[in-house]
Length: 149
Image 1 (cartoon, rainbow, N blue to C red):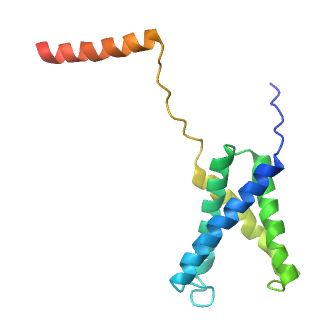
Image 2: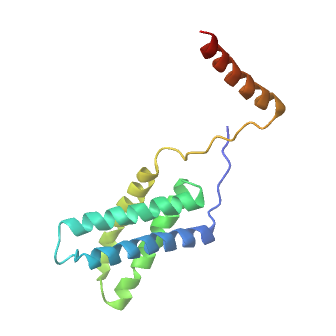
Image 3: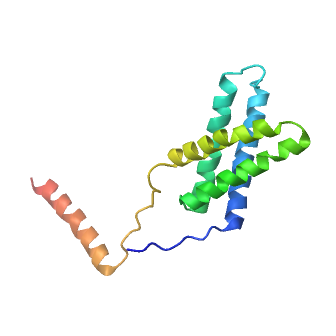
């Protein structure tokens, strides 16, 4: 059986990267409000940053309605490249940016794991005549059985 090739939509990748950074930025603002910074909590802050990034990845995957490996890799590479802008600003060195690839990879993997094994799809009701009659009869039989016993 040959699977169909999934083409990565770059618009969805950019949207996913924006969602991850938006969720992370909002979480960083909340953390800063409660005075949780890398300087004040050097042990807790990286774990919270990892968790907030993973939640952002899970939200981006939910919005994109896909969990394909190509999309995950594209989001990871996009996050890593956008974080590389901090090298140009002077906030990071090139070596720390290159080392951050492990953090980005673990964030994407954890975000995929947070999403779960499959996407929950709501059960659509059977609105055909056969389905309606079957539902009515099943309710009536249960009602009669309880009434006459």
